Amino acid sequence: MAGDADSSPTSGAGGFSSAAKGGGMTVGECQNMIQRSLRTPMVKFLKEHLEKSGCSIGSNFIKAVHCEEATAGGYVSGGGIVVCSNHLQIQDEVTQVVIHELIHAYDDCRAANLDWTNCAHHACSEIRAGHLSGDCHYKRELLRGFLKIRGHEQDCVRRRVMKSVTANPYCSETAAKDAMEAVWDVCYNDTKPFDRAP
Image (cartoon, rainbow, N blue to C red; front, side, top):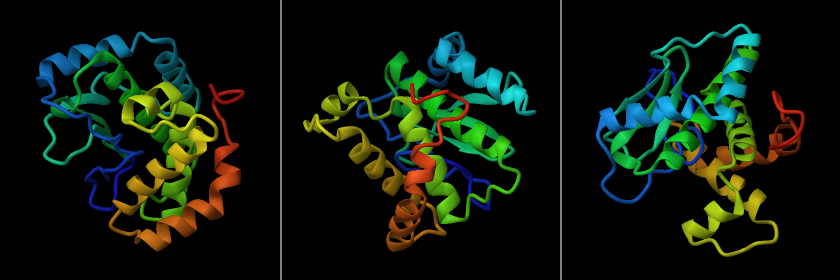
């Protein structure tokens, strides 16, 4: 998810990955899990491509915080990535949030005119993050209680894009749906920096 005009992260399924159920963890525990996630191949790949695009990320770019909103994390343009410790419980969830938000950071870096208040821009980055991060892998969907196997991935991406973009104060539900439909084909098929969807 991405930051809105007042620099607070926007929440929802994409930009801010959906919050996990349960009690969560401490900021310190989450920060340790963030450090572990930085050693995973997918996170290393995304960091490398961010830097190749001219956007280096410092040691404080990804930080664990306690969040009031029911969200798992978010990306704030110019501010970095926050991971909501109190809404996550296991390493896989932390790594998934980091991957999703790094895709938003990559989009923000490579598109000089990306405007997070523009519903189509926000929807496009959410489509890409949902599709490329693994958020909608069928095993994750089964754990969420969505039992459909055939066609689940695009349904999941659409559901999570709508949740995130409608949380953007600049996008009504109708505007979010129209924006998502307008950019779907181009953004779903844009797999950069990957050769193809992982």
